[in-house]
Length: 248
Image 1: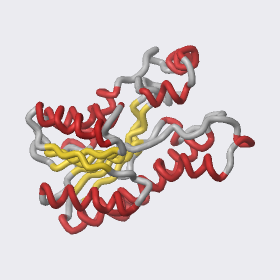
Image 2: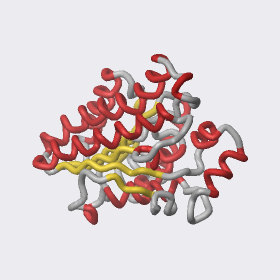
Image 3: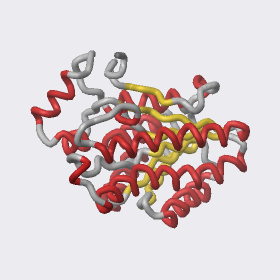
Image 4: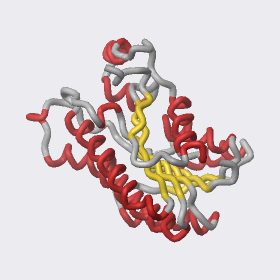
């Protein structure tokens, strides 16, 4: 993994940030992206302080021109792209299906689904020429289960898993692996927004057999494993990391 070129979208907080720090500590060369310039520059400096070659590129994955420039800048800086982690996402608008509309649909799907589609489109464009690469999309346990009052988020993660499997089939002959990590509830600001309160977060924790929330660093560990040579025969898989939540 040392000296691999790693691109991470949604890298400024939570799982994305933990993943960037984990790769930096292993000597990877990093391009991290997000929508907030100040936070991005701060992360860039933090990664460099760990000894990593790192660059922040401001990008909004809802816009193809941003995604294309992001991938092109990564290749221009480092000459290739070995690993891509498509982590940018939103919890969307909670509430019953009867309260949803075209605007709330777009607010969720433009980031969670279109963003992953556009990211893979341009990552694969580079990786197919190389004949190698590994892509990880971030799904959720809700990507293969139902959840009341979270229909749009749930549906968007189901779509991410479908995109992952289809891309894996298309890319396998080119030496590229495409997988998804599906976290359970993880200690992030997004979880706090999603649950809407400490009591509801506690309820999600109680539903985890290990009786705790996951840590962003644990998801980063799973991402590092599945993008490594130790997982060289794994592609097209949705890998649950959830403390046993989907065991039954």
